[in-house]
Image (cartoon, rainbow, N blue to C red):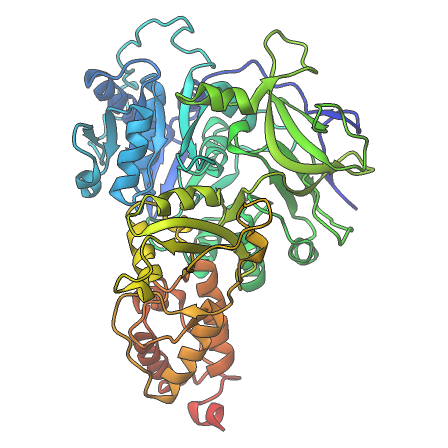
Length: 634
């Protein structure tokens, strides 16, 4: 029997979720859990656990240090801490102190950190000691780390009193965090999210049931708004939050932690979800509720999961950062339609409308643009009133004064059962490795380089079923020495300016770009590429052994790069975690030997992997049903 959790509302033009509770600040709700169950486990990571009292205590002490350092209400504080209990302490401390946190990715180049901190006007950064040297000059570092705990009988120490403000010290309309999205101008835009919007997402949800004994899993980057649900849903509801350790993310390691920690609520971005269902379905054995979002979900993967675990609840969520993680959700234990996985109905505290270009409602079954309104809306884009006015419009369907709605840029249609089906983007925005990206961002960065006269960046499908970026550039002087390897050098320069998911898989150098009769770049006339020249700086070394020769072929087929040298790094060539899984599956199929994902991360060249592979082949598993090296070679 199908179990479905749907929001209320009338199928058709407009849909509404259940009204939200009276909004509260997130740190107040966590503090109440600390009072209610001080010794209950709150945060677990790699064998270390903080109780709710310890979490709240440490966050209050750090909040006091932030205020002593000069933090004013709604000031933005950068947080540069790897996944750890200290990360959660830092985020909570910023909220207690009255500030708004800005999650910084430790793996991003320092130039990216400097750009975001400057745009956010953030004068303080909480950083772990090992990352302190990544903080730009002029920004005050507050180092967070394990601290001696107070005696158990001693009450939680409150942070120093917050200065009064027009909104009041604990107003849910205070800014809670800043999350950056790439902009069509090439400059990142900071989305300001208030406490009210988070509260509407994580408390009293009408699309999921949160139980006191639930165990949630945190793996998303804090800069990515999936972390909002992962972190705050368990902590405001008295559940346990399990953090994936601060190491390279592999499917087998994630599956192992999920099973070992008995995770019951698991959110995975769509691409990662597909890979986990395909390669490690056993990871879902103890999970009660699986959630995904960030891209278009595959019906076959959802059906495969639900057929194996019929008691499992599955949620396909949709939502832009500007409406706080999820705008609509489809929650069910069965999927009968093969065409698509619905994105559901508006979640609690949210209204949606499907409108045409004149902001008139579109009839059910017809395609229109999705607009979102309600308590989940962000304030807008920090310091960009024009961009805010362009996307956050007056809501003609709202009843409260000053109601706004957000223009998502996504095309949808109402289905007969009153749920929404995602159709596509109305603009050029795409999803790359689970992140929302605009190719124009990369084009702008390329055109800032002295060697580039013009640049175009297009999305294309990659072998893992996701999307990758392909760049085309016209050099300022095609006759300059070294033009042949210009694409390789440009990729290298971009690594210091952009996060990894925005680095094009390849950059093709062209003498000119095709134009149409209107004089505009004809993007459809640009040649696609399934194979490109190797794009790494190290010297090419040809394969010698039979194992190296076959690995080179497998790498070339998967990455679309030729020729591949034995000293070339898989990840430098454009590989990522999802492609790594495909490679290891291909290696197992070809050689009959299982190679742990960690081996590839530690030995990412053909030569190193070949050595590890031969060693395993020469030490055969003698358990029943396995084959020897000699048997495999026949």
